[in-house]
Amino acid sequence: MSAKHTRQMAVYSATKGAVSALSRSLAVEYAPYGIRVNTLLPGYVETALIGRYLSNPMIAKALLTQTPLRRFGQPEDIANAALFLASDEAAYITGAALNVDGGMGTTL
Image 1 (tube, rainbow, N blue to C red):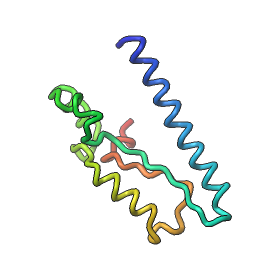
Image 2 (cartoon, rainbow, N blue to C red; image 1 turned 135 degrees about the vertical axis):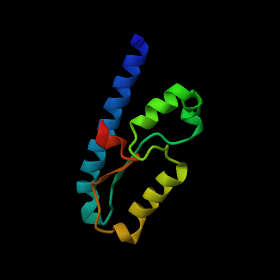
Image 3 (cartoon, rainbow, N blue to C red; image 1 turned 180 degrees about the vertical axis):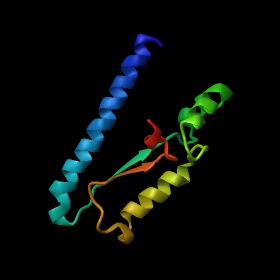
Image 4 (cartoon, rainbow, N blue to C red; image 1 turned 120 degrees about the vertical axis):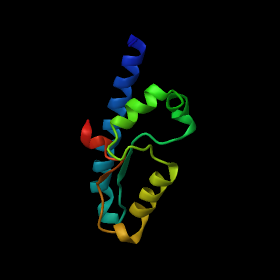
């Protein structure tokens, strides 16, 4: 693994943590105004962004073994979770982080 790759992962991890912390803080700050703030935590989703990795069978297999549902997410999986959190059915949810990752977060 190159030093450049390692730094990129550190920055990615730090910014992901910062977004989660910011979301929780905003949820508390804006709750009195009836504004809900939640975070989606997607796993590997079949998009152009990771398509080059998924086209490598060895990488795809390694990623799938980390995902209990044994499939990659689809953009619709993320969209459906976002629609739920924005809906009236989630009216009492704020400050939550919803894993939409096929169970991958539970194995790490």
